[in-house]
Length: 315
Image (tube, rainbow, N blue to C red; front, side, top):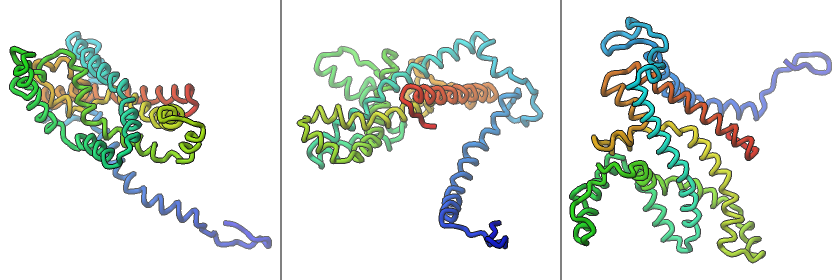
């Protein structure tokens, strides 16, 4: 409580800044509650990793096994081979994704260089639509193109390139590159949106100054556009490195079959197969916790490296 010059108590005045802060707090409260319910409450399920849980038996009536399931990939040779194979697939595919992260930025730069606004919007819309198509429908489209009786095989046979059809979806050659291709088909246009937004925010006077200096289109891309996009690229790169063991299961589940499963079974799909298909819920939970730990280490490591190399970081 504040006092005046005569040491009398004065009522506390709530200024406009405090009111605005309180309003923002009220606005963010539902979001915080949602994050707590959907992101933190499910973490209670991690307790299954410390018990020898069998479906149908309450978890607290199951045997407490300490770190048995966490050490299982290191103590059991069969599980160790499975885990190493899955980690190899996960890291290999995600490294390809990291290498391809430049493509949305390059695509956005080229797109913004198109003079015709209508043609530019058409290409942007055409390449963004696949992002809204589920992987199940995407697989149906690729099946009609790449299966034994698909369009590609029919054309190649008519042109005399192939004598017998090739089932490209079951063929195990270059599986990681194929998954990268499907990933780019679905996400290239969507990933370019953030770069298009960044390019649109560049002050036009910068380009006018470059024109006065006699810079051509390539020079303006090299010395104006790209330098403005680099900070955005590094932020997305750090986030992607944090997700290097986090692929999701949609894409890999629908494209997985008996022939290619060993090449595209990533960590998330491995957890799903063990937990829900085979009923090894405790082991699947432990592997999921390993994945969370690795992701945290990777994102903090990448953030620290970014801070040392570039002098800036996400947090």
